[in-house]
Amino acid sequence: MTNFPRLLLVAGLLAPVLVPAAMDGQLRSQLLNLYNRYNAAIQAGKLDDALALRSAEAAKELRAGIKTASDRQGFLDFSKQTIPDAIEVKHGTISKGGSKAVIHALVSKKLPDGAIVRAELRLDYAEENGAWKLIQPTFGPDPDKVPSCQSESFDPIGAYADASNTSVGGPIVRVAFEAQYTLIVVRVADENNCVFAPNRDELPKFGIAPEALVPYAMVEADGRKHKSDARKVWADNLKVQPEE
Image (cartoon, rainbow, N blue to C red; front, side):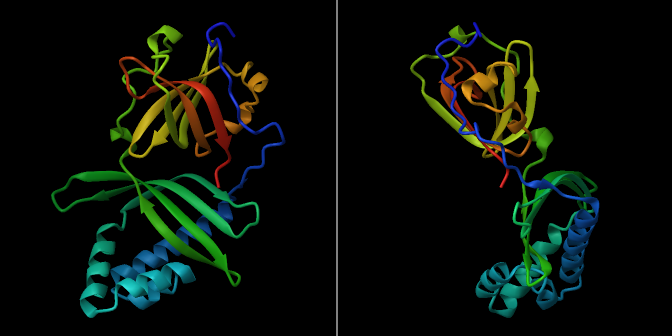
């Protein structure tokens, strides 16, 4: 591909890609109900009931940190503030072994002043002794407010600094297979970076399975920084791992 000279991409995905299984609707409903039961116990001030729904390790760590009555009330008060009014599931997977599950969602909550706040939410679950338990709810930013590259347009190699040597890594937000290139939007901490790689037809020649480039898969890219846009990267090396 003429737009990607001297490019060496390594993925380690020449073997068949092993990915977690998509979550079926019944399990998704079961796990969301578990999260709702946890929130209901928190709302009712029943901390012990709530902790009984958490994984053994998570409950042990929480109990170690909330020993006094003041600590317990503080945890309840804080947790109540995080209970969403609405939850929209975006993605769910279950591990190959079937003992771990993850739900990604977009949640919203109305504040006392009437403002509506939105956030990403990751719910991690583990199956223990035949029952699903909530490991951890992890809140992220409003996806519409995450800083990103100035422009997603493709720029030729001359727009990138040869000696910049930058690395980015994180979950894939979105992939666009264009005629001349592949755009991979990657969440790096609290911002999105635009990583540019060869087009879909060229990717297998560099050891990249196009079907591996899906939202929530993990990407590590080494390459060159754009001269004027710090969130744009020209990938010289790319590694892709399925979502865990």
